[in-house]
Length: 143
Ligand SMILES: [Zn+2]
View 1 (spheres, rainbow, N blue to C red):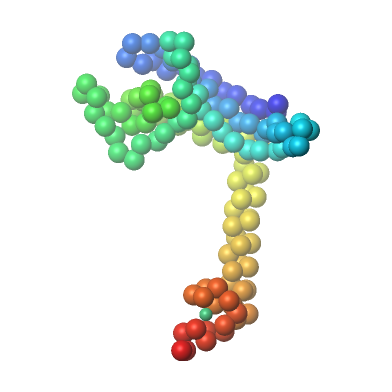
View 2 (tube, rainbow, N blue to C red; view 1 turned 90 degrees about the vertical axis):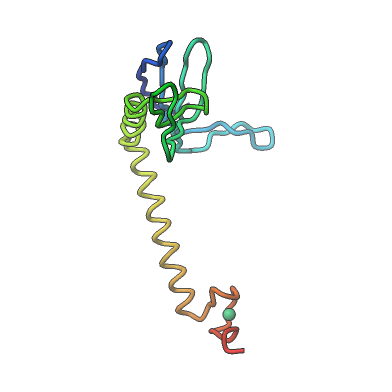
């Protein structure tokens, strides 16, 4: 499996945790009994602490207070991140997003979006109506 990983350690109140960001570029799938690999571009964050593993970094919209400490993010809904730890995890993820494969994928996504927007404009210009979803040339409005 093609992947890149970056790892940091953060200090929690009672333990040290290892946080790993992983950029997966391939995924093995089973297609009618044939194993094949598909190209993907996904970043996952995992946190290992005291023999347990939690997945998924969650940037919280609003911080919460716990024992007088601001918690700004969490991993797997279980590991609370203080301002300092949240910043470290965010930097780790951002660092991973500098990977050429990720950058190229983001550019492709942006291009697809731009193409779709242009296509949508062309459709409307050619008489397609976004209200009724057919080529009514605005007739649905006239009645
Ligand atoms: Zn219409």
